Image (cartoon, rainbow, N blue to C red; front, top):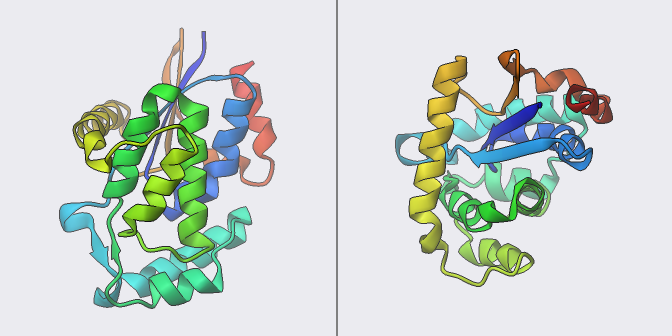
Length: 201
């Protein structure tokens, strides 16, 4: 039996770019587990005003060109060009942990809502109300902090899996079959997301 594990961070631009591919994999009925890596925290919670914004904008424009995913003027103005904006994905990691038991489709739908809020509507990573509002769509009305410990465990498990397969960044898609474990290059499917379903056949 073929199983997949998808490791992501909601606020990773490349994960946003890969979203249609992962959604196609889940929607075809594949056995998919998703894990929020929570990369952007602590020393990796970058402040736009410290130069990260310029670098991020270059990557975002490339992602948009390759995948067709939208990075709006509101995002550029309110996020990238806001010197005080900090790329901290903690709230999204806690939210993901709170819906994790609802399985991959729900967690990816939550990620999609939060990514649209950021990359299209220009909502700050620190806007906890936006995250709580998104959770209500999944029947979750609990304090975000209740997801902290579970989020930490998921991130640790994801890091351990990445270590085993030789991956460090996100997105990472791992395919496990009777023949072994391999990484899947999601960029191969940017232009034709539906073709990834063949891997699960």
